[in-house]
Length: 188
Ligand SMILES: Cc1cc2nc3c(=O)[nH]c(=O)nc-3n(C[C@H](O)[C@H](O)[C@H](O)COP(=O)(O)O)c2cc1C
Image (cartoon, rainbow, N blue to C red; front, side, top):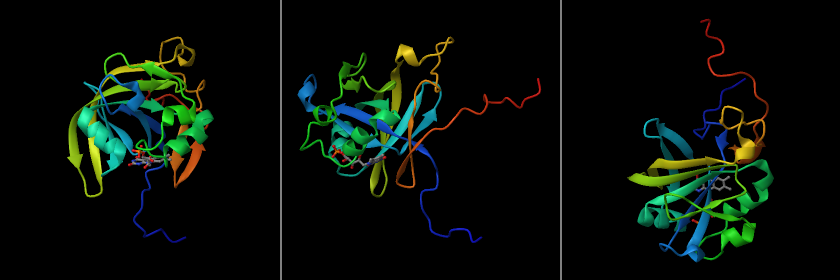
């Protein structure tokens, strides 16, 4: 079997997130949502994440200006709303209304989070790294929320209770089942 020589994104799968942001301070009528899968973790203490947004997009401009965003992890049940947030434009459409999402005010930043998402992070932008066609936003997570019904007895997210949506090869996938705990193979 020949290996593919085409250079393409083969880091599969990626999570599907909904980044929320607000154009005008204190004005929730200017809230918007962008679907994002190019996201990652870049530091542990403090907890830092990165998102990558195409240059010139409405969301890229707002987040660069306001320097804060919510990052809501989407479940499979929201696939259709996610898809629409991934081609509609905040400059033209109120995506909260379009998707029928309930807003929850973030605690530490001036954005709305999405109640229907089981995991919600509040992020403050620390650095913007311009790439060729995209900008990378590196942000500190200043608060994180998991809806209580999705926690296990140790107060950790219980992934068996939420069906997280994944993105790979321009397709949506679900996560599948748990196999083992991290480092289960260590002997001591
Ligand atoms: C599943 C999914 C993942 C996406 N990931 C990204 C991404 O990581 N970066 C990006 O710039 N656009 C991504 N998009 C496209 C944006 O969501 C899309 O351009 C959106 O319409 C921009 O919204 P805005 O005009 O309100 O800023 C993704 C779309 C979907 C459906």
